[in-house]
Image (cartoon, rainbow, N blue to C red; front, top):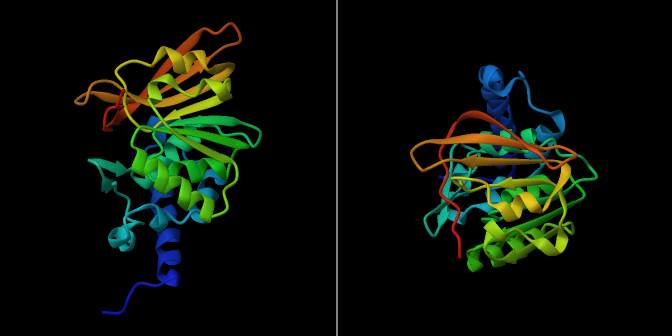
Length: 224
């Protein structure tokens, strides 16, 4: 069998985005919209997901499924990455905090859409790998540190938006403290067997409003 080539992977990536569009249309009632933002879809098309999974899994990178990346963790399903990014409503001037870098795929998607991404990862091996890969790819607007994501990254606060790629039973207070008035958090919330994708909006008086969307399943956020 011939090895898979960059040309093949480019075609598969286009197909992945088409599948995301179909899923978004089918789930229109849950999302309160029939299509995702074109900027988000364009970022999904630009970022090469196969560079953010173990090399042996590169041929499977554009399947609409999570993939194992080590330490009992996975890279999220492409549709879920696209939806969570879309729900964040990323603005070109935004400074975004990501909790749970993994191997850096979500950070790369965000970096295509916002001014600056700060990302916190508790697994040192992941943080090191992600930092190296993102640097190789020329992303100069991503900063990564190893640490407890529930504490955020206060040195760069406040943030316009915050995205969690691991579930919590309730929002960590430190993260809400680091959110700007008028900001938004997108996160999976709830115990392992009953999680929902949740949007938290903070008004100018720092009051928060929660909106639950559809069921999801994420690993729980590790706390140091």
